Image (cartoon, rainbow, N blue to C red; front, side, top):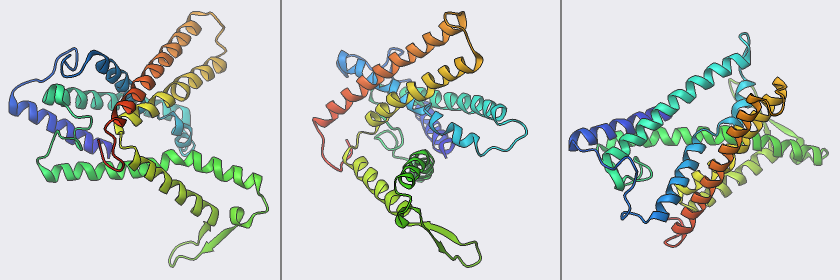
Length: 281
């Protein structure tokens, strides 16, 4: 799905540049005057958070690896899959970002598909938006599974005698196996989805929220823990060249995450000045 809407966005960006025969923007980004210097700094930091969010897949990496059959080993398969997916993602996102900026320059919207950037052809945009919806619905389910599993396991440990939490109701489905329905799982997941949806509608700051999530999830989950686990597994001695290099990488990413969080929070504060509930800014 992401390949579909990314390709459409990239194609529309290329078409816009080809039609106008002009490349908007500059190598230094948004011009001072369109925004003030401080706004440019905050937006740069916010963009780092958005980029970090695109690579915060480590939360579900182990979950995915558990579903892979061997041989070959899961680690080898995941290593190749991660290398290919990260490479393709980077190329596509860089192309989309560069051509989107080239097409609209300083007036490029945060989201080329749902912003004010493209309105025609409508049918192509509809396909892209459908792909986004399908992608987000699936991603929402996948990313929430670790949280769902943690809450349900904890509840079962705390209240082992509660039938509401532990009992499964067998629901017969004609032509298929019976479905085991758990009332606690049904109720709490439904409430969780409703609450998260309402919060999302109340806070229509897509880029800012993505930046915040990326900032808080990128360093600890994608950098710090993997680096520390690698050091422990390989028994890399302290103050060796490799150990120092890994620590520099970790600290650098920490600084980037802090800057991204600051920029994203600054964006939220700025958006709140013109905030209207249940309306997109």
